[in-house]
Length: 446
Image 1: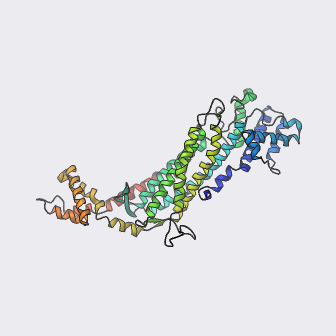
Image 2: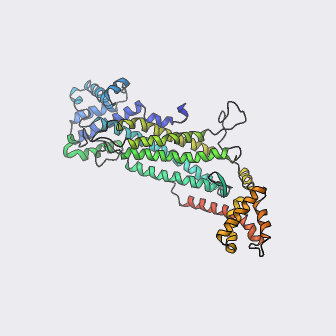
Image 3: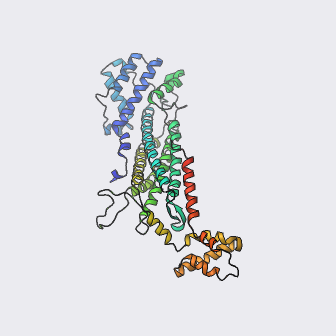
């Protein structure tokens, strides 16, 4: 059942064939750089790199062999060495020279993460722009704002979406920052010092990183897992914000509210027992993902406490956590994008729900209008009492206010002031202005 929650495209980046391709790319880049720097014979470097780049006969690792070895790098290097030995026995002696298993595996992980972030950022940009279009379209579409799930005051759908969009924009900016700084080559050798390269270590790191399109780390990060943890944190944060949007759609889809709905499609959102139902589908995918991803990110944080120069278990835990976190996050993103591209808006129902509140959503404006004459505290308590009367009598608050204001020796409000207090134009105009102002100042390019 997990297929509906995961991104097939992202999951493929962590499958064995892709990981092996990334590992081969590392070995090819390492050999070519070492050959050019004279760290290994140029002829051997060419044979190693050419063999790694030959896609005619891909390597395949036996899972049981990997389990016994403790990581895939050991049997991988052994198999690659055997293949090169069949071409040139002397060249085989220089395979993986000066590197260690974690260099190979971490670099492959960085390549997968780089591709993951590129895909996520592309689709996140599409989602953000689809939401920006909805903000413009519905900047003046009035609806109820709800606080603690209770009817609060009028707002607009455009403002509601703009506020949610702002969270996605923040995540997008952070993902851009991470993409330029965190995807770094891992190359430190057995204990991180890259001793085999001697004085040419920094130059070797720069050269290999450039060949792979990664940043050259200033120092080995074998047991400094800040890069991994921060990548996980931003993905979990993205999923949380996506689920916030999805949760609101679910609430708006409730039959008693019925202001928004996911788009219709054949076989989507039905019920096995009740033919009339149109259930949320995409929304629940995002919410489910956001229920799981915080634990996955927390696992990455826990895995940061790695011992000395090589982690015993913490590093290995990342192999379980990262692929799931990446795949679930993108799955949630795809689901919310689907929602926004097909979002059905019932503006008439939104207005009807506003009109059904007995005027209570204007209570704050009424109290503000009375404050100059009565004082803020008295005005607030007075309108609070009138609101209780409106609820108990099932009468509109304006009717209750007019009845009580008639008993004042001097009516503190003119009819125009009273009408203004019960108009939603002030709130709609404010919501529209704030929503459009946000669109003007945001940076959509991230």
